[in-house]
Image (cartoon, rainbow, N blue to C red; front, side):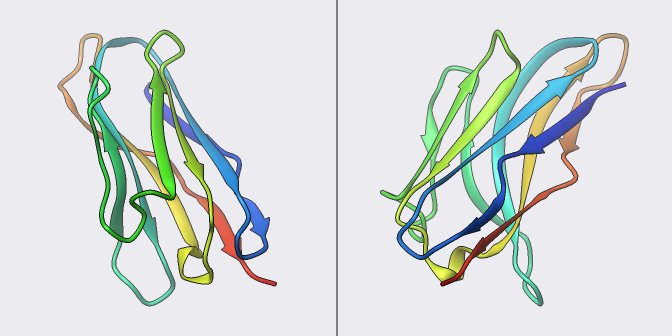
Length: 120
């Protein structure tokens, strides 16, 4: 059974930093694109960052220059370093991965989310 488990959320003051991680467990044939999304109360889930298996990254303008996504393929883990955090970054952050499990069909998987709150 494939699972994505996020960690690292919490409360931080504006201008501060947080680091998130998401580890994939289970019997995996291959992991393709990985990413982070977020959802604030009353808003739709939005893309935060994506990274291909070869390390190419994409960010929306709202986080570009402040957030950095990275991955360790050997550890089946994706990371999100968040700097210069703003109150509008407050949301539940979800890990996403395009995974081909052993003996199963390739599809998107989601973590259960981790809360990030930016407040003084």
